[in-house]
Length: 115
Image (cartoon, rainbow, N blue to C red):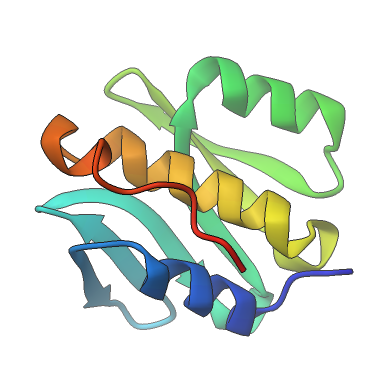
């Protein structure tokens, strides 16, 4: 079943210490000051921090769902088209993005959100 912005919001809410920022067309998400995601409601997409290896694998496997956004600081950011992923896969991707940015002490306290 395709994911929606509501699914994304439920996943974000289940994580700890998420800070929101607002841009003109998007909301950004950080944990303790380190960015891990973006949401563009108009295009039904999210941008998520991943390892470069994971970014490349996702884009190669399903280019109709995942796009390379950019690379920075040893990480590869990927655009996810929400209708192309189910809620469980989205939860895994969001959790991994959050975990890559969260301090180790916090990351070990939080597990993958259950939907």
